[in-house]
Amino acid sequence: MKTNIGITESNLQNTAALLNNILADEYVLYTKTRNYHWNVIGANFQELHKFFESQYDKLDEIIDDVAERVRSLGHWSLGTLKDMLKFARLNEDIQASSANEMLKNLLDDHETLIRILREDVNVVTDKYSDLGTADFLTGLMEDHEKMAWMLRSYIS
Ligand SMILES: [Fe+2]
Image (cartoon, rainbow, N blue to C red; front, side, top):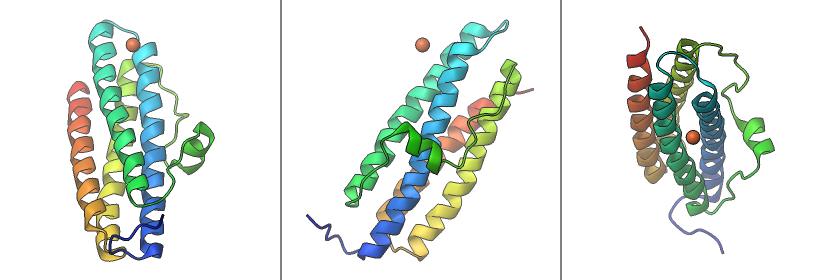
């Protein structure tokens, strides 16, 4: 059944595509954070092991919220790993051999996403007239700003 919420079909489609790109980025960041949770080594292993877990738990919630936002707009969310890699802008393959490199790499991804989200808030407001998604993306940006602060605080 068609979505009749006062936003044109083409604007809904564009917003859904924008959200699916974010979903893919979040998925890559989730996987990378989980990878580091498993593979981090060093004197502060236990602390970082737990810290990365708290971050991927938050990203797991975010992933679900973004996918369900796409569905709320009447479109299909991405759902395969192949598509996540295809549509993500973040790079999964950056090597990190030390805990500090892992922290810096994650921070860089969060900051990249914050810059994308800041731009996307303007795009969905000005071009697609979707204030609900603008509000949603603003909240998401704040979540990433908080996660970025925590990562930054570990880096000397
Ligand atoms: Fe675990």
